[in-house]
Length: 390
Image 1: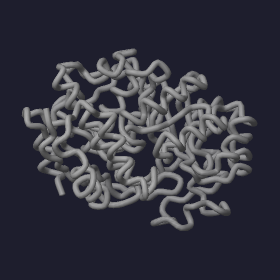
Image 2: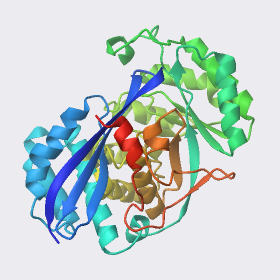
Image 3: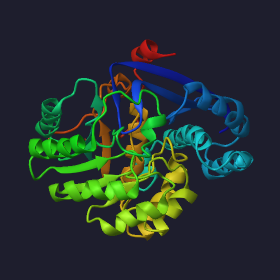
Image 4: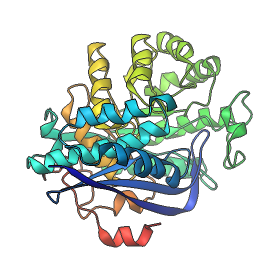
């Protein structure tokens, strides 16, 4: 079997109401799918993250550089192809857009292998479990969401069966050194630090004492401010505290991990094994959060997970894009012994909820089941593709 072509599908959904986390304004949900074609008619599907930029930027790397590297190659040599893609572009760095672009190609290669061997990808990768607990990833800032609306939102997740939930904190323009000051639409849906403390209290009251609640600050705070904030909400039984400081502030994150009873989770914004090595070996995180569409694909994420396991750390990947991203991460999580929990975005996004012929569904017990078809085990809904294709 040989690779004959690489193509992309660009999708874009404009949200009816823009949302924001601590520093990012999100009026739309873009998605870049990658297809790797073979001479035996098998087409592998993947997704390349486009966070922080344009679809066309990542697409250019996929089609103009990575495509030339893998054309004519054997897709089963996925480890070799990963090294070829990374090494030939090493002068451009080991992080960022290159890893995002490689992720889409790498996932598609694994999908080809699964299809060719007629094996669900999670089983091909190790098959540790076939069911995952899902957590509701939500609680974003929007223009008109007050405390009552926030409470109703989270109460609804509990009613649907979620036993784990996560909310955003950190959109505080009154805080010095917050990166928000330099971001797009910095004045959209702001909150004071005191209001964020109240938001956490409101959500805890709405979900009750038994539901596990995580907080995500998206790199907004300094270590001292993050510590100050957690001292005021940690008694609310916070399950983990995600990306409290800048990703490259390893010493600051390590300080928080040592001083807080709450586990520090991160860092989704790290994009490769070398960076995760520093976070793990320097004890800057208690929970490790790679993403197969962002961190170099399944090939690289397996190595991150193995290193985390060697240090006794759980892996709870970042998952926040289309249904292809969700499925690819599900296969990865189901194949590792130190995984088991899936981030399940609850914001309106038909590129997640309507992209597949068989959508991902949560059970009344708050779980999702792995697809049993070969490879990723999914089929795209062509009507959704037509509706949102760029």
